[in-house]
Length: 299
Image 1: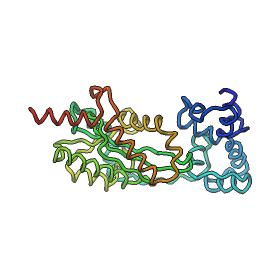
Image 2: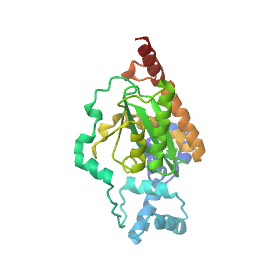
Image 3: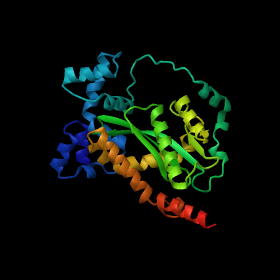
């Protein structure tokens, strides 16, 4: 195994080739590797080429580096995959950074400081009291393609009520996820719970007028993490982490967006119906939530 890794790191063989020669599976080769580590190893042979391009053309951006790799080295790589590699390798490009105007909503949140986090000030001890939301990048098609997944999940019951997968990360992705969550909750308990919180970070999608207006029109209370504190939204980080750790090999093999969307849908259904959680009596979210509703109706 050590020989196989050395040969790949030196760019002597591709991962598929070295696995074939050594008689080992790709799963064995990748064992205990993070998605980023696996992704880097797949493209280790490209690193020196990229460094050469940047060395001779320090002002190049991603598009020009991509074109130079193709023209000078006959090496083809997707734009998103290249951008991800540059970030992982710490290869910073010389480019002008646009200054974005701060929205009025964002200014208000900044002025309120940590008071915007209502979740940590609320005793959440049952389902339907608070939702959390977050967005993550999903790399598929061997890292050549990228999509974004947003979810809205119950803080206590762990149930994923709403989700949306898009190729673009904008306000629409979180609006659709939220609207699906509200629709699902209303199907289950016939109403939107009073004083329901919706907690998220202060990303531009979540502080957009369109999203905040949608949430408040449904009578839901907004809560935000303070900037730079991902630990204030640990449930989402945990969900996304499990998804990538357990499914990245399968996701790598998915070639197109539609099939990725079908896969994510199946995975969320599995998570809700089958995945047991220690925090909810070793039950799956759907069973726990149904039992909670049943017990409430009996009291």
